[in-house]
Length: 360
Image (cartoon, rainbow, N blue to C red; front, side, top):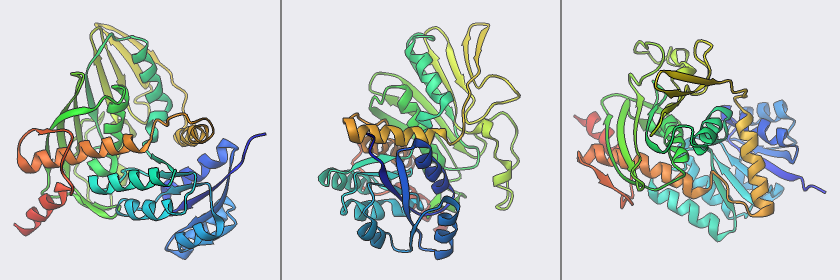
């Protein structure tokens, strides 16, 4: 007989709704509680998903409900504090949204306390489970383009490394079998940017990094990151309406006999979302997918990990590795040189870069 797990969510914003649907879709979880510092947000969320217990204090929720699995869906600067405090209650698992944290010190502390309390910690890079990204991975493993040599990623054209670039970096690591990164060379535009999800962000970034097996990758985010349509510079009000899914995590995988193109989160002009190019020949693949089904797959694997000990694709060390690349890009931009891994950096150089620009 299958065990039903009690689930709870901290932070009742947009991504929390995808988590709630993911828990429901597994058929293995009861969403029994939610918490948000804003009572109205928590009430609205509980009404939408039929959640019986509502809190404004997540520690009170943990004390009274004792859920098995907890999602952390708050702004990024709170991931560290909330995960640390949740781990003390020893749930079976914590599903923390990306990025794992804002500094390497925070990420290390999160991983350590969860290990000490026997809590499975996973980080929300759910695109590994997206049908189009997973299909491209399968084609790569089948040797359809020979041996992987180089990768390109074109991130969200109007966002930053910590907000959305973390997904792109995680996907690049996924396609190269999570081989460690050996060095990174990066530059960021710290002259503008935004303040989103609890922290300031750069306006654009450009990076090259190498893996220990010799594969190299390039990454762009923000500014005029390559997409399938021109983007005028947006003002704050029009930002959301100008984003095309076609420019969101577009990836090109180069191999010794061809290349695989993944158009990102949606189809472009009706063409197949995943394509193999070999010389003048193009083979397209129609991939049926739902935008939120990946989170259901994340939670299903989480449950399998709890019951069978199977390592999770999004385990804490994977989330930490993606953050290390981000911090490395910022450090490279600050020091104007190649940065080698593992990093000794304990803070986030981006905040110093932005502060310098503001002061000047």
